[in-house]
Length: 166
Image (cartoon, rainbow, N blue to C red; front, top):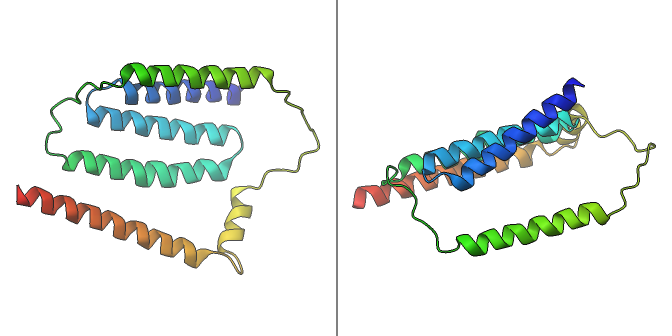
């Protein structure tokens, strides 16, 4: 019962964060709404017993991408000025309605067989042993981390050079 309540609270938080992203005119507040959506999605994964996906969501999206977005927003010169209105509002709304209608139609018209003999989902410990155990991919994970770090440093130095030039 508690897991169900947590799931629905996190689902409402995720949708609220997504709505904040698309309705806020302030870029900084939209980025904070995106972080709320990311954290809520990680919580949803954890309530669905997908521990590894929840941890990956926190590490990758909340820990890296959200921080990078906040840094980019902070390096933007005209952060106080609100976002300008877009001429694509009507076409974007039409696209969202078509997508939502199609998704609802597919959900309602698909037979969802239940199989009680499914194997157990791998846990974070199992996946950790596969990645970092004997013959694992630890070196590849470390190289990817260094590559991301180099990209962030390059983006910051490029942004500084542009700001110093004006």
